[in-house]
Amino acid sequence: MIIEAAWDELRDDVRVRRLGELAAASSAGRLLLVGGCLRDAALGLPTKDLDLVVEHDARGLAARYGELAGATVVPLGGERFAAIRIVEGGGWLDLLGLDGTTLDDDLHRRDLTVNAIALDVATGEILDPTGGRADLERRILRATHPGVFAEDPLRSLRLARLELTLPGFAVDAATEALARRAAAGLEAVARERVRDELDRILAVPEVGAATAWLDRLGFLELVLGGAGSSRWRERSPRLLPAGEGSNPADSLPAERLSWSWALLAAAGSEGPEEGRSLLARARRRELLSTASFDAAAALLAAGFDLPGSDRELRLWIHASGSQWRSAALLRAALAREPAGREDWLELARRVDALEEEELRGIVAPRPLLDGFEAQQLLGIGPGPALGAALADLRRAQVEGTVRTKAEAEALLGRRRGGV
Image (cartoon, rainbow, N blue to C red; front, side, top):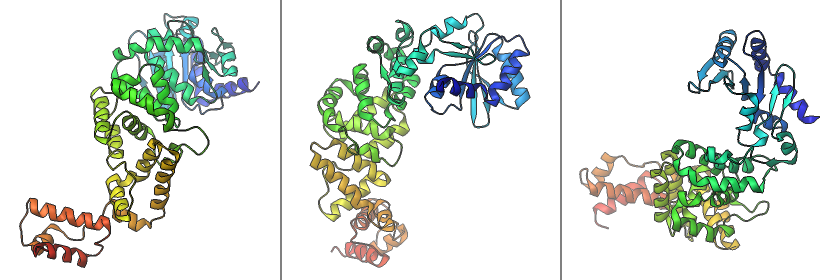
């Protein structure tokens, strides 16, 4: 069977074999691969970071491994549950001690059946008390027990993320109902945990599906507030249409997280300033990092009206900065009609066609004069008047009316003469 062959490869991992040999030579008891690494291996996904459980003395076993392999051993858990990370090369092993808990209890308290499978490293025996193997084959996400989301409401967001990222998976209807009921408890979960999971959800390619999940969980109001979430629901059907090649986000040049936040804020507001306020609200509630806030707010900075003239286009590019392409794709996603969407995509193609040097000069014009030269030409000292003159010079460079030092000198010379 394909799944068994994939799991045998995990057992053959040199790190797992070495750890298994140490466990067999000690009183550590059974060592088992568990959880997400088995799920991902069965699906043909990368599994360089592995999860294992051992019956006894996880700390001692990890320490012996670290000494033998020269690996770094990092405690992750508290006194009750010994969770240890063994870092070696480009990956790591996470080792959980079962001291005081049976393996069956450990598997039953996990969130989803596809994460509640264990594989004995020594014998190859598969332990599957909740039917996770069958759910893997059917590509179904199903809760291990009815209280699983109430125990940790963050699992409701994790459920959304797994459906969005695991290929071809769907959530069992009863499991979604459990997650929706428990999601209100997210208010009480540590903000950094919520933010990390939210970042993973909003970084997926299908941002429309991601935000639909947030809405179904009642989490969109926590992010955008009542008015913002209402506007999002009104506008979302036209934001990201279905169909290959129709989603502007497919062409994003960089990571999607800040773009998704900017889309949420823009669709949940009546303009860029209100959108920035929604982002600031999320940051105050610690749902959005400062770095993500800055990047998302920058995507809202330029105008939302399509530039008409060449001069307007150059000013729009400058206002958008180096993220002009993402800013254009954002506006394409927000367009009310397909024609408007295509107009913004055509704008992106026009800018792409510019010479690299010209584009660089629009985004960040190189100063043609230093401050001392400008003061000499204007006949003034440092102060607001000098700053205003240099700002006008920079704008002229962006517009393309000033390209050389001689033209810059002429512009400031005319300003001194009152022309």
